[in-house]
Length: 145
Image 1: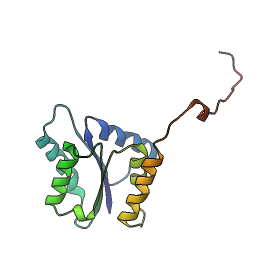
Image 2 (image 1 turned 30 degrees about the vertical axis):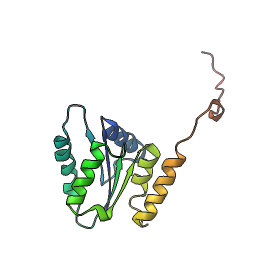
Image 3 (image 1 turned 60 degrees about the vertical axis):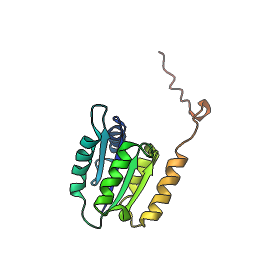
Image 4 (image 1 turned 45 degrees about the vertical axis):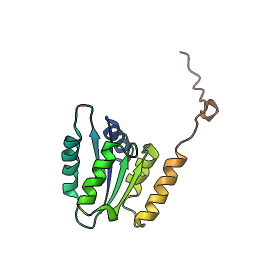
């Protein structure tokens, strides 16, 4: 089985997880863990470790983080390394909605983890675009306001 775990500073991971769930429905194997303002790194480690209880030897993990080298990702990677699970893990930082959606929607496809990583990165990159007024389709409902 593949799992998607989102980690971040503040409430970003849980908020993104909530938004993804609105679009995809509740999916098995998708978790989020925040390093909150009032939380120590040790508390984060304890909380993150509870999510790993559902993961079995040989499962694959897609770890998404807000920024590279922050406490959430470095602590998560250390825990995964101590369990010997890094070989079956892809780690991506700079998560955004297209990246998280792609990871969740495609995680159960029968493609390799490296192919999945490439697709997710393309979706994340392509999702970053400038939005201008000309992109809005104006609909005239012909009603008096």
